Length: 425
Image (cartoon, rainbow, N blue to C red; front, side, top):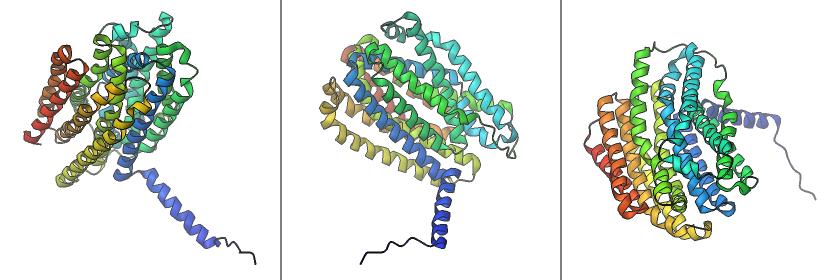
């Protein structure tokens, strides 16, 4: 006898369909938990794809090219961050209550940073990254144009991400991040003959693809009732404070690849890049969770302080566990993954991972101070950490090389974590 295959009856099929629709509806509306989980997933998958990309790149490009391009990308990110002027923070804070002005806020917040980045892009040839940019082999016009496209693309991309986060559409951040990473993989081989210039072209191509995939950020939304009128002065103060504090907390680490490439060697910058990518997962998780939390708190301002503290403790604990897992996974296999620089990567990795956990404490403390509107304390707190993160590595770099720079970064984050214990929020 042949077994009979029974298909579910129509009522069962309808129930399954309705259950699936409910699940997809929950994902589409993106609650705090879903939005935060998607941002964590975006950071996790992005970091894995990023490390994989650089590992594969070493099969087609030299470690020197990897270090050179990582320094230029760091410099471009710094300029794009400078051009942002706090518009990303304004989007996340005020877009949920902008009502009929939502589209105008999105347009201004995208246009201004993009234009500023276009004007500021030539700065790449004026400060520490200048030597790194000049080392690119290729037509001068092309070597100058590609970094400019990279800077402008990053500036606009940051705003797009903020719009998606504010609208609780973190799934779009995830999808376009994956699309951008896949585009880089596709471009790796065709551009290999250009060495460093080709690798920079690959990275820039990924940013362009990300911008194209993110155009839905500027779609016309359905107007919602404005929850409360927002004064321009309040927006300016909030943007300026977050811009200053964010720049103080993020800018120093963007300088490290440039300093290594310019003052040590491109190959050392390449090895440092791999170790930094491993810890970048941890340093990116804290702001991602903080942004998702802030976007939710704007909608539900009655969230209890006790619950916020518990969530922060949980985030730090998860990141500490991840740091241990990353070390256990990468330390023994570094030699198998990398054609060059495995020994240096192993030497750089431990301090960077510990520093990343401390950085999480510092970043979340900054978020809480901003949330409580302790703006003066926020600037002082971030200012002390940023000053330490610039001065200490520069003092130690001439004596200990890359290891001294890492030690300075570790000490600066340790100072910040200790301050976080004593500064009241």
